[in-house]
Structures are given as structure tokens and as C-alpha cells.
Image (cartoon, rainbow, N blue to C red; front, side):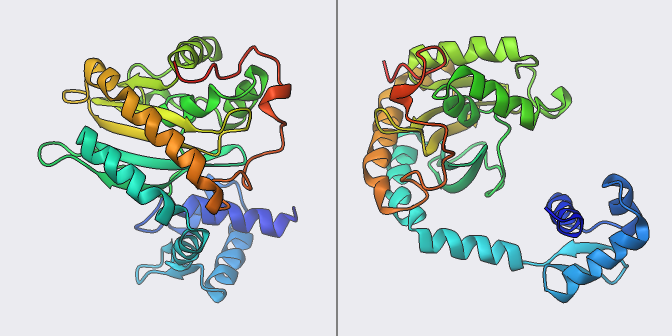
Length: 279
């Protein structure tokens, strides 16, 4: 990747976390870029419509990337395929249900359905890349991978700063591997106050037998309502929804494996670190 492109992409990624904009000095400092070069790159991004300058002088993203992303998802068919499935699961559980898709080493939320009729709602932003080590979705995907590859992906992304997550988030690879082993034998992941304080969730991989997982379906809600007993009660519905998406997902390139890394067929992988399948 050229230096100019790398700097431009770094700025775009940085500004995704700054919806109210950020000053030139802040952007340059945070990204370790020369202020003059950062200024030039920002104005190139303005020229191409990806960044705008606010009246006070700060820089913020335009809606161009969001529009591109939504257009891509619409044309991929993934939302049309997934929405009826996740809607039924949301109605059955009366909780938030989300679909995340595997994209290389990332797991990105792309669709949701809200089942709660009242009370607290859990609704994280659409489109975010999930922290693999402490999210139910991340753990549900990692449990399907060979152990060495799961460790590689988590190491590359990082465990994150513990203060940004829940008190039960794994803080070491050893602790994470223990959690993944439990999830693998269960057939789905369960977290309680790991991704965020006061939040519980469960997730199952969207995966055909012998093939890599292409996505993950998640049920999430406040821990006061989504208790361990309720999550166990919802397990059959969650696993059924995941299997339905695995079967019907061939109609969308995002759910038939076109976006999954080429690490090989599960049947050819060593048993250690592989999913045992729903039990």
C-alpha cells in the first residue's frame, strides 16, 4: 500500500469515531502524521467528497461512505435474506437480534431486529467491527476456527483496553481459549457483562457442516432481563435461526462465503480448536 493511501485510509478510519469532527492538530497527532501532510490529505478527501470541513474548522466524514456501504448491502441481498429470520428470533426472545458477517479477519454488524416491547433496549451502532475477544459474536466465530488461527486474529486485533468493556471480558489469550472451549462444547457462545457492563448476549455461527462460518447471529439485552436461564431457554431458537441462514444464505455473496478468508476446509483442519457443532 502506498504511503499516501495508507495515510488517507487512516484518517477515514479515525474520523469514523468522531461524528462531531476533529481538529487538524488532533488528527495529525493521534495518527503520528506531519500536520502539513495531514492537511493536504484531508483536502484531497474533501475534493473527492469523503470529508467535509465544519464551520469551526474541524474535519468530519460526509455520508458518502455510509451511502456506499448501504448500497452495497442492499445489492448483496443479505438484509432481504436475513431480516425475516432475525425478526422471528427477535419476536420469540423479545430481545435485540443482530446479524454479523465475516469479512476477512473482521466481524461486522449488518442487520438487526428489535424484539423488546418495553424497558431497557440494547442497540449498539450498525456497521461497527466487533471486538472478537469479548463479544458473543466474536467468540461464536472464533470457536469455529483452528485454535492457532483464532489466536492470530485476536492478537492482530488486540484484546482492547479492559476499561472499555465489561468486567468479565477475557484479558488474556489463555482465559479466552477456556471460554471458547466451553462455547464449542455448548454449540453457541454466552457472555455476561463481558462486552459491556450490564449487558448479556449469546451467539451462534452461521455455518454449513464442513465449511467456514460466514456470519454470526446474536441475541443481546440487559443482564437484568437476559439472564443465564433465559439464554439457555433461547438456545434452540438461536441455533435454528443460524442453521436457516446457513442454508438460505447461498443467495447472497456475503453469506455464501465469498468474503471468508481462504484458510481451508474445516474437514482438513486439526480437531483441536474446531467447532464441535451444536449440542
